[in-house]
Length: 136
Image (cartoon, rainbow, N blue to C red; front, side):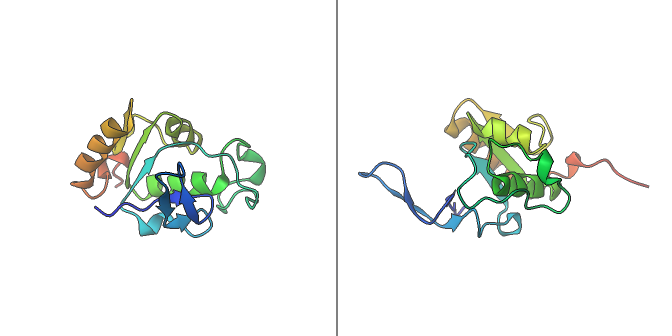
């Protein structure tokens, strides 16, 4: 696995004594680039966030509390059958994006290690095909 840190802007995040480099900003991250998403939080909209980023979503329907680019990333990954993990505030973002916490391929945990462990297991299946009902 090669984890990529996605944040509102480039640079570093975290405490000054242990900064973590940001590899993608919300403006440059799209779900097609990832095999799975692990949500560590539900970030408020950045100053450069401008409404829904998905043509299928009405701008007025987008909740004000979570960055719309994060919601788009989650919704796309969910529609693509990708593994999604979340814990703590990440559960809020997951549910707001319309991804049910008990859906196939979605793992939740009480902490980061629990969610990561479940996500690693899901990656072995590549996609959560059980998420979609078979059609004729």
